[in-house]
Image 1 (spheres, rainbow, N blue to C red):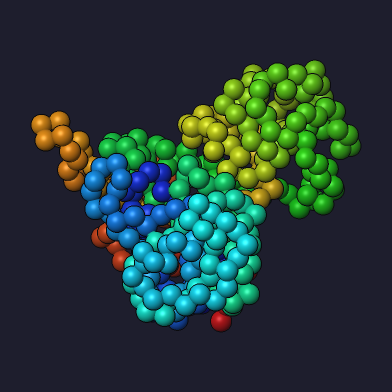
Image 2 (image 1 turned 45 degrees about the vertical axis):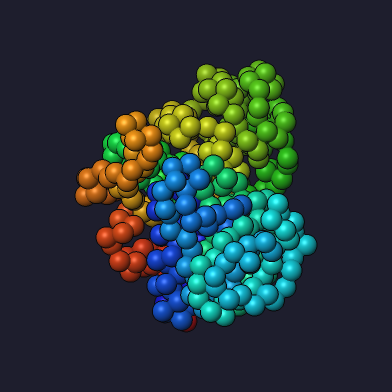
Length: 366
């Protein structure tokens, strides 16, 4: 079993959570399996030293044969030998994006697309080259383009919060938010959701009230408040800010409604994970269902016990660690998705999670 036309995101909750190490492990594993790989990033990554702590961090060591999409100015600072195949009309602060193949393994600095439509262009170019698995290096704070992936792996750990219980709690929140089901096919086919407006509908699919695409201010919800008791469904194709999320929880909508959101990034980007989880929990307890038009499932989590600890007496950062077994077990118990230690575990378990997901969703090849 091998992936076919699968795009996988890897997002870190913070710097030094093991995202780069996770990416390198997957590149090495799938290369040895003969899988044709593509690699890009959302924005810039690949510096050798953390620009805040001054501590060394791993760079992307990429095997030969991998297709890479990065910015032009990254080529000169990469030790890998790259053969440029095409230049895309997508500009970045580091020059246009170039599509290249790694002819000799080495370190690569990646600076890829930072807009959803540009990542879609990159993904389509890589698929035209018969790429089987595309890895997109990203981060939670710049994850909007991640909706162009089929699913993602979360890298978290003590560098995010040096308290295993807090890391586990937020991992639980993120897993709950990201793994809501897909919108029912019958609802998607009715054409009711073919609008750029946020709206509520009643019996027979009649639209009762609508407002702007993005819910930025609570005042925009007033038309919905007036018809709340008649509603059977809610749809928002855009962002929902914290203030609007709180206001939605106060409006007396009926129980057992269908709440349709565009994708997880639309609520993750402007909100703390705990607030979104509270919103989902309140709806579920009332008997409502929350679904996404475009899913972004969290497939697995990798954890890293390392964190940079500031020493006042020396005025610099030093490496520190939480207890690694406790961290891994706490996150696994809370998140209910497969969890791997980014350093101690080999890559086989994580690779099998990816392949199983690929097979279940029709991305597997022979």
